[in-house]
Image (cartoon, rainbow, N blue to C red; front, side):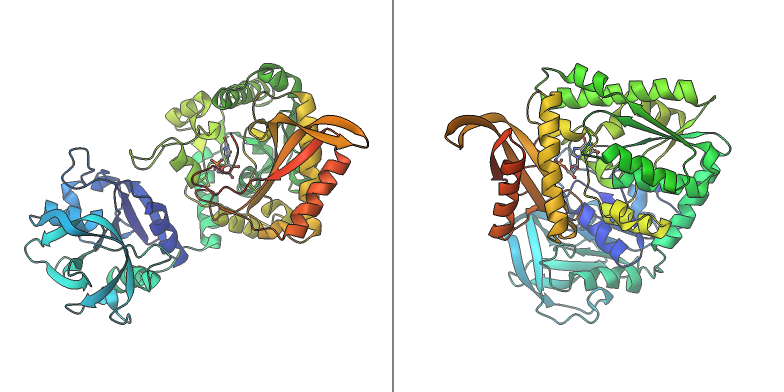
Amino acid sequence: MDTIAILDFGSQTTQLIARRIRELGVYSEIFPGTARVAELPAAELRGVVLSGSPWSVHDSDAGVPDPALYELDVPVLGICYGLQRMTYDLGGSVARANTREYGRARLRYAAEHPLFEHIPEGFIAWMSHGDSVQAPAEGWQVVARSEHGAPACIAEPKRRRVGIQFHPEVSHCEHGTRVLENFVFGICGAAAGWTVDEYLEQSMRAIRQTVGGDPVVLLISGGVDSSVVAALLLKALPPAQVHLIYVDTGLMRRNETAEVEHALRAFGAQHLSVVDASDRFLGQLAGVEDPEEKRRIIGDLFMTVQQQVVEERVPGEYYLAQGTLYTDMIESGKGVGASAKVIKSHHNVRSPLVEKKRGEGRIVEPLASLYKDEVRKLGAALGLPPSTIGRHPFPGPGLAVRIVGAVSPQKCDILRAADAIYIEELRARGLYDQIWQAFAVLLPVRAVGVAGDAREYGCVVALRAVHSVDGMTADVYPFESHDILEISARITNEVPAVGRVVYDVSSKPPATIEWE
Ligand code: XMP
């Protein structure tokens, strides 16, 4: 399939570039900025994009691409740092600009170029740079300037190299999609082959080829990702080869275990082990307050329980399947850009078992190049019911990261009760599908209230509801006030332990979606 490679130099918007190109129907994949050219998919490669970066080309720790990149016979688009990098590496000069450009800037054309085909002059581009091209490298010409006079686009037509100082991937940039479209189709000549059906066929073939006749083990969480992987495995392989393990940690939502079991059996699962390990999890978590410690305990115990179940029930060597998404890889600092920072340790990416299996080459991660919305589309193509596909994301450590501080069975029961009412109300009000993720959080504080004539100390529950595309950033869902007031009243009326409900109005960043 025609592919556009994106070399990531640590920009906040590298993800967006990849998404925009995929939205055009062309497969794009992110590689570390310093990747060797030999690591790029030579046969499928139709073009390369160099991302922006928080660094300047003059910084000693700035990422430098493989020099062989400049010999490649495919078009290259440099965005911001990518433009400056090409200029600097090819002998031009880059220096700190007199006027920094942040935000909107109008573009004036200095020459014709296919990158701007069908885009009227004077459009508003989105800038964010301190350095600027002072003199383009030999053979390069200025194609457009910003209203402040700085080169906004330069190009080297012979080798089909083009660099832009603005960010076409951000939604504020006028005609940004058209710029990417002109590059991908007009300049690179890529064909749109990135469809869910195509991906489904490809990944089924890849799964069969990788695992041969060996058993494949998948740990099911009940969330969309592992459900989609389960469905994919059951479709790609004889069901007898697929071993699904669902560990009830005691940290699940109300009715979750029964619903997951029902859905998987309906999908043809033959080997489905539902293991009740709630006593072990809640026992080890007792009194532990530190969120990373809670995650570590849960992650490790998950793997221990899984290993025990596998040893008991799966004969011989096996492959481990995982519902790891692209965003998990990136947030855990794996896979792309050495510059990606670890935000939270998602145990499904970093556990010792996963590392071991990865080292042995016995891991199957069919969603590792997909974004959440693409996973949902894949689920639909596989025939999973809308109720499974449309489920809000649920974190691996479950309710443990929604009970701030130490976890106990009683707190789990209180949270489950409040959360179930919240979700039931969202569904009844037709709001569930408009919200990307909603859940209740139990806070480690007690507040005074009155019940009848008595004064009581009750628990405090925070409600969270966010809009997001992929969980990387999120906005608060703006409830109609009557909805949130009525939901809150139902929770305090029906869950006696809860005395107070608050609504979390923080976006991500600076907050994260979960509270821990
Ligand atoms: P944060 O809280 O990092 O969450 O803004 C972003 C998205 O990731 C989910 N999340 C997790 N998922 N294991 C997971 O599988 C985890 O440890 C984990 N932590 C957060 C979270 O629910 C949100 O959708």
